[in-house]
Length: 125
Image (cartoon, rainbow, N blue to C red; front, top):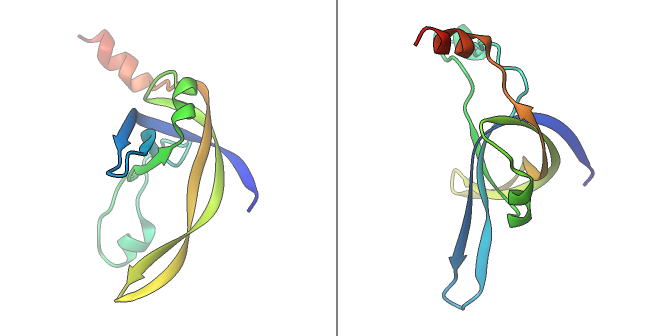
């Protein structure tokens, strides 16, 4: 499947290396992203119609190849991410189903996030 590029906010990145019982090594980078480049406040409109109040954005956690660690300069920060659609097999209601999912396969640092409210708060300290 074809990949595309999208700007996302990386909140966290940490490399890992795990040795499997058979002696092979599993390594990569655990990352948490907000899959958006828009930090404007959000209200879940569908939930609001059901009388629920759901605000904000939930981070996505995924694993990147260990080579991506060389490109990670800071977090939180904006990154241009190369993304592809993958299919995951999951068990839903006791039955296996294939569901589409987005997978980040590469990142390029764009820059630190600039939130004017943080500048204002830091000036008051």
